[in-house]
Length: 417
Image 1 (cartoon, rainbow, N blue to C red):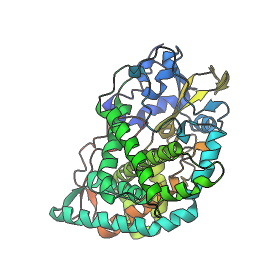
Image 2 (cartoon, rainbow, N blue to C red; image 1 turned 45 degrees about the vertical axis):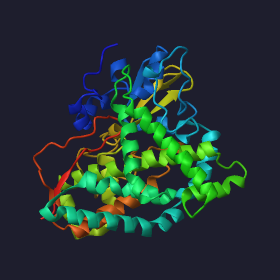
Image 3 (tube, rainbow, N blue to C red; image 1 turned 90 degrees about the vertical axis):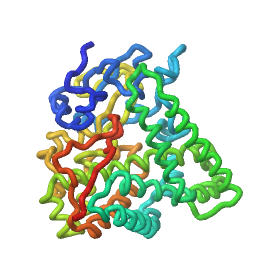
Image 4 (cartoon, rainbow, N blue to C red; image 1 turned 120 degrees about the horizontal axis):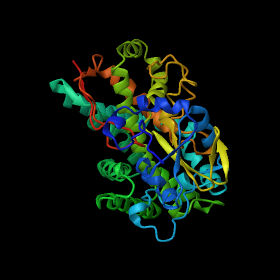
């Protein structure tokens, strides 16, 4: 099986702009991909002797995400003799709903939906506004010389501090959250067959240990935070176990940090590169929610996910064998010209609410409402406080984190004068 020359997830030039390289995939049915182009999370399928499949077109991506009976989120069991070097890092824990199907997933989702209902998100809004204001105050001081780093000084702190608030842990823990999260996510940058640096499993273990300790502390001295609320519900039928609660907290830290921080970085870069669109937002702040949706479509913080075929089946004319892994490209689907007119144009006037940045179906991102709330609050305050905000070095090529599935900037220098 030969490589797909236009798909190179380990190539920095591909990571800098994957969308141009997705274009040939729209004219093809789902394609088999060789070992060296697979993410670590699909290495189990390779170890079983079956190549993975890449799914890029909007209609196919949506079909896979909406059909958990044929395309499961449960990773196959490791083949006998498989080594740690060739298996995915278990970041969230085996009890996380990310890797579960019904009925286990249905039960966990029902319990956790309470914490992320629209009503609950609205209760969070005043604290989110306060946190954004606190971060902007720090940015104002840092930008006294005329520039600041939007990623490290704005996009990264906000979700970490929000999550610390939600979980009821000290705000100063956000630096540890971000380090553990970034280090663990960097596993995506390690090609299949190569060992993880020791820092990656150490960070994942530290994150789990921290949350186990927090659960015990909240059991002894409960508060009004999310962990305490879920602990108080443990007397209910089918309530979360401690392991499930810890897995949820780790998921919130990992996904919440990365999704929102990268949304803000990627989105503000897109807005600054389209000055007419930015001018519209400045003139009419009511457009900011629409701008956030277009940011999510145009350059989503999560580029893909994985599924596993539960039976011999077919998709777009391609035969799929039971147990085969599918690399489902959310970012490619969001740029499919069959779904979005002029997909490579950033246009906040388009109806972009059918993008797949948060997935679709039963595994639609649990924290999507929270991420949107944070993003709208952050962009609104940033635009209001810095009316002349622009890229400090507009002709420089931005540097992205060396991963494919999680797409985010390392840095983005902004000028305020």
